[in-house]
Structure formats: C-alpha cells, structure tokens
Length: 524
Image (cartoon, rainbow, N blue to C red):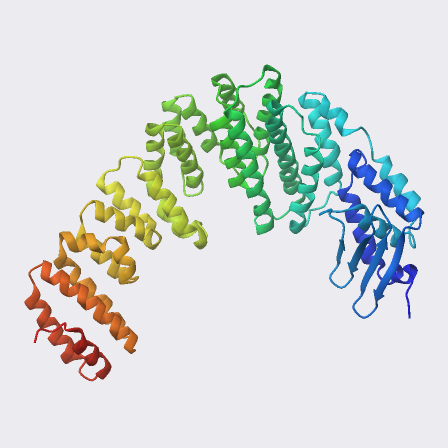
C-alpha cells in the first residue's frame, strides 16, 4: 500500500520538526547564499517539484525525487535520524530543505515560518564587511553569532564543531579580496567566535573538559597560530592598527573569563604576546591593565605578569613574582619559561625553571592525569637541557620524573658516564634487551663491560621463568651477548663458571639444556 506525504509527516513529526529547527539555526537571512537557498527550496515546494518515490514503513526510509536543473533524490532514514541528497553539495542543500519544508507544511504554516525567518534579517553582511573598521567587523560577527548563540542554555558538546564551523563559513564568505587584509580578517573572526564560545560556556555552565570541546579548541588554536605566524612576517598597514587594538582587548577579556579551558586561554594569550604584540608601549599598557585587574579568574595572573616582566626586562619584579609559584600554577610558569627560551630570554627562563624543580614531583605524580605524565616529562627534559643545572638540581629533576622519566634519566646517566647506575636503573624498571640495546647498552658494554654482566643475567632469568622453548632461545641470545661482554672485560673464566652453575640449577629443564648445548656457549 502506498503512503502519502501527509502520512509520513504525521508519523515522524518529531524528527521533521527537529531537522527544520536545526536547518533554521544554520541558515541566516543576512547571508545572501542562505537567503537564496531558502527561496529556491520554497519555490520547489510551491511548484510541486517534489515527488514521493518510495517509503518503506518497515525500514522507515523515505526517498523523494526533486525536479530541479537536474533531477535529484533525497533520502531520509528516520531510524538513523539522517538525511542525504544525491547532489554535489556536501552540506545542507536546497533539496534537503525543500523535502523538510514539504513534510513540515502538514503541521506548520510555511508562510509564517518564512516571515519569521526573514524578520531576523537586520543588515547585509557584505555591506558591513566592506567597511574596514573593527566596529563594522564586530557587527558582522555579532549578526551571525547572535543567531548561533540565541539559546541561553548550554550547547551540547557534540554540536559545537558543526555549529561554529557553520558560523565561521558564513563569515569567511565576506573575506576581503586584498591579500594583506585576509589573514587579519581570519584572525579577527576566529578570536571573536572563540570569545563568544568561551563566554557562553562559562555563563551557562557548559562542560569544557570533554573531547568534543577540546577537539574544537585545538583546531581553532591551530588556525589562530597560522594566522598569527603569517601576520607577524608581513609589514603592517597603518589602517590595521585599530584592529590590533581590538584584538588586544578581546584577548585580554578571554584571559579574564571567570573559569573554563584555562590552559587553552593562556596558550592563546601567549601566542599573541610572544609573536604579534611586540611593541614595548603595547606591552607596558597591558601589564598596567593586569596589575589593576579586579576580575575573578581561574588563571593565576602572577604567571601572566611574569611574562611581561620578562618582555620588559624587569628582573626584580620577575624574581618577586616567581615566589608565588606553587604546584597549582607551576605548569603555567613552565609555559612562560618555554616561550622565554624561544625568544632568547635564557636567564629569565633559567630562573623560572630552577624555581619549579621542587614543585615538579607533586605536580607530575599527583596533579597530572596519568595519560599526560610521560609526554610532559619528555617536554620538561627538552626544556631543562637548554639551561645549566648543578648535579644536585639534575638529580632532583629526574627524581621528580619518577618512572615517567626513565628515558630522560637514562640518557643523563650515559652523558655523565655513570654506567653502573644506568644498569641499576634498568634493573629497577625492566623493559627488554632489544630496547636497551637501542637506548645505550652497547655504549655501556664498550666502556665498562663488566658492569653489564648482572643486567644480562637479570634478563636471561626473566626469559627462563617464562618456561617455553622460544623464551629459552631468547635466553641463549642474551647469554651470547653476555659472553661477548665478559670477553671484553677479561672475565671468560667467570662466564664459564656462571654457565656451569646455570646448567646445574636448571638441569631438569630438558629443552633449556638442549638449547644451551646447541649454542656452543660452554667451552668443550
């Protein structure tokens, strides 16, 4: 029995209503392309260009045919909550919208919907884009973002990327033609979107520590970094100065947001002040604003002020500020040190990094989530290699790393030629002989072969305890390497006695005895 549009519409009214609402949120009447898309979708409905081709009540799949410049098909899977079209358009197209309009007309007035939608139009975006002033660009961004953030409730995290990418693409259509303005436009819009997102998230209590939110922040920060790098390498036009003033204000406001995504906000702020805002006058003005800030924020402003003391070569205030370091803000201070090293401020970075050492053990072992610990200790190792530490400071650093810094401590012991301690470390935290050979065992054997003998024994016994022929073969390989080290150390007699003792100890392991006999490890 064939179905009609009316029957399908009333059977799936909830999905149709939600889809129309989602399309409405993505389409803005002030954008010419969106206005044309809605007009053409309405035209298809009024001219009876949509035909119901098939509907399966069992699978709940609707296929419609639309007579357009070329015939297209729109498929709706009501069970999977998906709508697709055969036209080349990757995102929302007039054909999908036309089918939703067709189904919606059975329970709403399309004319009322269209009137309300068009009433949201205030000004053409391209008119604002052509006016080169921060005020016009801000009005243009607000025109789109007020529509995106019209609901005063939290946004579902999984919708953030699609909603804001949609807003960003609408603004990108107004991008200036002149190349010298394009990167500035991109940066300005990214910061405007980011400011609105973080303010909305903080105000509505959105969860900002989930993968969806972090994924969007990371991608946005990458785009912002690329724009900053491009702008910092070009000569500024005098006409762009008001935009830089506006960007300074926006980044300052993002920094002082009450709470949420603190590490991201600080990283964003550092990008601007270490690469783009390099004028001393601007830096002094920002430092003054921070010193008089009364905002309650989850970012420690002592950390931020330390950056400006470094940039302005104010050592006394810097020394005073780093006394405020604690396990809670030590990572942020280290971020400041990292940027300082990149800018060539080695003395200032050394001051911060040395002050941080006593706080690292508590921070790494207790505060950092386990998944970040090993990666973070590698980052610290790279930073501390760039400054000069005393022996006691180096030992305190590697002690703070604990088991997450074995690789770094191992490299340090090799550099210091402390081979017996290197052996002890790898017995304490066992891995495999293959890994150790890549990590410096060959160097140890070349310089002090006798200290490696206990390590070979340790790993050979571990293989034997697995009690399989394959493990016995691996034990024999280890003993061959041990024999070579014993020969270099002039201790072949010791090795022969050692192998006699092994054979006696494991005389009941017939497979092991066979592997030893085949290996020629024991002198005949």
